[in-house]
Length: 388
Ligand SMILES: C[S@@+](CC[C@H](N)C(=O)[O-])C[C@H]1O[C@@H](n2cnc3c(N)ncnc32)[C@H](O)[C@@H]1O
Image (cartoon, rainbow, N blue to C red; front, side, top):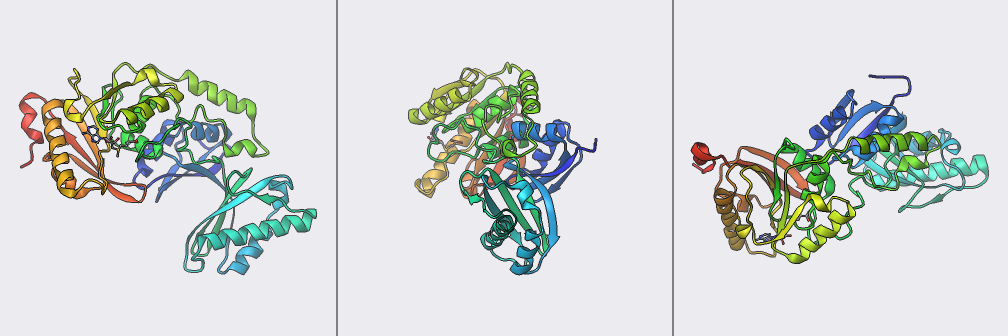
């Protein structure tokens, strides 16, 4: 419900995760949401903003739009930006940075637009205060965004600071770790009921298993993060923040099924273990080192979500055999499982030899990827997963 303290915010996300992000917001009690490409707009109060930053699994950052106007060239942009009372928002001792996103025939370079905005802010503050604040690209106290859609320009404050995928648990990365936001998004897209076992037989640094453990135990993914952008805002309410955090901690539950993280490489499992220890969920995951073909379990059902190798280092012929063997293993050892595979190698996926139940598109970084679902039924339905 709207109240007078509500503000508009924009939660940014990755391609394909807009719907799950909207559901997450709704589950936090924020119902007035609207989906856009790689973003969801919503309104909430300060409590909702703190909660969203701590608890959303599929948002990369949450921005607060606060000033908008029209401009068709860099001079107009500079002039309009200079009209704002920047001296109220940014103190001389504060550092700041401006990022830009443009989708416009008038502005074609996001960096140039951001530079114009930065110059205008600096000039305004210097003229009013006689001194200027410094820029810090890496770790600014105030992080600003300029978004330009044709001639519509908006300035937004970044409430998150560092991207929200940086949960703080990744001590070591491994070779090709999934982004935490993508991993959480994959699990939410799978519609796992969180009342069944979870397996990743090629877990690498453990991102999927860790995100699954956080989700299943209802642990807010950024509950241990020390810093958010809104902590540098003038209106930051430390007591309210601590209350929101305490309430989220109180809502944690104890997941009673099993979560398995397996990999061929013991080095990877060591990395996955270190990450799980940092995240404080080490005892909620069973780690093992095996080829997926020899991974043993006594689970009669569950969900299996994995991100097998698909890099160029393995020749295509090998990769086809690899995917075929994985498909054969799924048929043999994972009846009763709901299986989801993320791969950027569409050709190799064909060799898996299973009938897909759902096909989704995602991006793993810059790589266009398929996220396919295969249902490995029990007993009489056994043949259902066989390809025609
Ligand atoms: C793309 S990486 C997974 C990355 C992981 N999702 C993460 O976030 O770190 C693929 C993993 O499959 C593992 N792998 C390759 N062949 C395997 C096999 N035969 N059995 C089990 N794991 C295997 C590799 O060691 C690697 O860690």
